[in-house]
Length: 368
Image 1 (cartoon, rainbow, N blue to C red):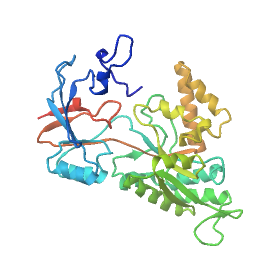
Image 2 (cartoon, rainbow, N blue to C red):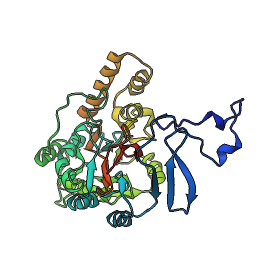
Image 3 (tube, rainbow, N blue to C red):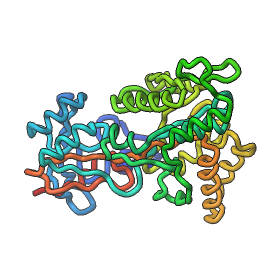
């Protein structure tokens, strides 16, 4: 498991059963130990005197729980907090504001943290038609989205998995934003606006539906509004339907026209995301639409998950990523990055945690 934790053998009896001690004390092997005092808002960690490796530079640190984004940023500005890490902790606007004010502001490099994408329900109209899916691909202005919603921090995605990830360096021809091309594809497929109401129809069926997404992030709400507006310009009426995570998955199982989702991210990409592209999983995970139009899609993923042949792995990745692109079953929107803000009066620099940049890396703190 990517989140495996090493626990001291002193936590177990000789027969392997867990001692009662482990119920109240953390017997880890890391450079820090929890001091034990807490008030529900601040947790203090100190150097572990029994640590087997080189002692860390930071003697102690406090984790302060501040649920609200605005309050968190205010605490940082006021000097109550010296380091914020991760897009869950920092809004893009707040990040750029602090950067302009001279605070230490860092963006993770290397592979994308994960990819935002749209998944189409290819089992029924209108998205069982390749021309309609391609029309959406040409109608979405990704550059405008990454610049205006994600402040240029996220980058335009042309493949469902960042080419910098293992096995994902497949040459694909990007589809450039072209509204007229999108309109032509719809009209050639028989979707026309006969009554002039701004929504196309075909055989008495209107080109409309919903975009299902997990709510809770104001930026995603803005993204949905922009996507709906861009699709409206080609005569497609799609309304956002934001739900809590569990309700989202239950609703998706019923079949939804378009779903906004994301890959698993580091360190699970690309392997976990590819594994979930089995069509049999279509009632559980949007990525399963990737190979839904391939007769032997399940077998392809099954064979991939048991082979150790590098040539076969690369061949399969090439097929899967090319299939997604050519059939437009999934539409990548943007590659995400992680953010960090630090107080330059106390902290000289910060290095993101390798492989999981959204995780707080105490060892990556360099003091002044």
